Length: 356
Image (cartoon, rainbow, N blue to C red):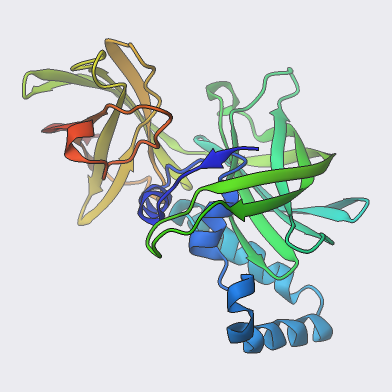
């Protein structure tokens, strides 16, 4: 049993920036807040009769209509993922396994120099007040190395749930034509109970009850989509603080940057997150870091820009807009809209011009 507090604004900001990687117990809150308009809470059941009727008619005529709809919508939740899906860059898999009442289908997979993406759909029967939830157990390469990542976003309609899992692409895989990954997913029955009511613009504390659990193993071969690497190796100082940009990796689904900076106060502020912008032409793309370890005096982070940035431009401007430090206690969720007494915002900018 666990308790998690997340506001809608917190999830929305991270989701639209492409930096949100929810834990197993948080994926349902992401789906409930943004991607599940046809999910029917008990207290709204009478108001949603028409939606139920439409869904049932679709299921009667073509059983896969809902599944196709959910997998497409799940892919479009995050901009960069939606871009590669709509461009037809994903590799169809369509492999289904069923254990008991739970069936999992790997719909598609995709790999580029920044991330490996897997879209999957779950169907099955659950008891009243329960739902079937699928989480990542492991993603392992042929050499035995695990790949870091997990569920990113999802979309549910009735008894069909589609999700996208995202994993960081190890550097050594970039020159391969095909990436081989053994993906193990766990299907289990989950019940979420609200502990007490809160105002409509807040997320109530949730109690999670998990029942059962079966592992589904898939061996995936995914074509590699190449990207572009811009070596930078420059340092800029602003406001008395130095920030170094080591490298920018542009790929169709996401752009990442290796950024290092001096931690202004590692004692009183336990988390430091750089807020960054990448601009090319008239278009700007936002991103953030978030891998800082408490107590570090010098931090190197992977900045993720979760949008599709053009690879073929001659000039990019990478700007670190702010370094945001947070102080928190008791497992509070770190967000950029925390009260002023819990954060220290150091405004730059630190500007890096990238030209051929």
